[in-house]
Image (cartoon, rainbow, N blue to C red):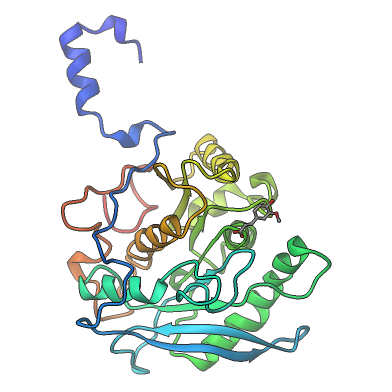
Amino acid sequence: MHLKNLPAVLSFSVISVLPAAVYASDPANLPVPPAGFDARNPSIPHGKLDVSVSYPTRNYGMRKVTVYTPPGYSTDQKYPVVYLHHGIGGNEVSWIGQGSNEGNADNIMDYLYSKNMAKPMIVVMPSGKMDGADDFARFANFGDVLLNDLIPWVEKTYSAATDADLRAISGLSMGGGQTFNFGFPNTDVFHYIGPYSAAPNTQQPSQTIRDVAAVKDNVKLIFISCGSTDGLIGNSKNYHDFLDANNIDHIYQIEPNEGHTKTVWNRSFYNFAQRIFLDDGATGGGGGAAAGRPAAGGRRWSGRRRGGRGLGRRR
Ligand code: FER
């Protein structure tokens, strides 16, 4: 923009009213969630946790997964599913505040439902580390298990929708790397992709995004987050830059003054979970007009977006 050609007063007013979204490299600056959003609250309904249940794999024997079903879960309807991955020292209970204790997905979903802020969904938290020569291989080897063992088992065992519009992939650190690595090459399987604090197992965007048009056409939300002081932020920034360069809508949420922490992961899941599965009318219940809105008083995200499709039904 050639501001020198504008009268000073006009250029000032133009700049001051432009939404932040026009600046491609701005982080989204989503507000901090309300106090208690990730804590167990005895006075609200709770979803049900099936903790550390086993499912069969073709190559790794029986493996463990924790599954959260929402309050009011009923086999009369099919639910969207988010596959939520742990970090390097984690397992299938890390996202429910046990073991390596990396997040509180169950409490966050309970909170969101208590505020009518999320679609009813199933949260699947697998142990995402298989056998392998090193951690990169162990986490990489889960990709085939996810696609060919876990997803079919979930869809057989729970009242789960089977449409990619109703499947999301997310995770933290090594699980954030998995989210990039398994999500982008499989946009026919996952239409929502949410990596947090992605680790060095993250493949290059040029490796995972072979078909920019397919990503634009298929993926309804890309939500990348990281703490501003996290030494691994380059993995996230690298994708943010690639997505910008290719005009692919996404939210880039940097948590100020946060490192590689559970604070980032809980805030990220809170922000991601309320923005997925919004533009499908088939799941019934919950959601409604309030679905997906940021917390009361917070402003809507200002992440990069184009008009038209791309980020759920909010415009
Ligand atoms: C590394 C730094 C961080 C690395 C993995 C991580 C394998 C993963 C961290 C986590 O999952 O929390 O160099 O290499």
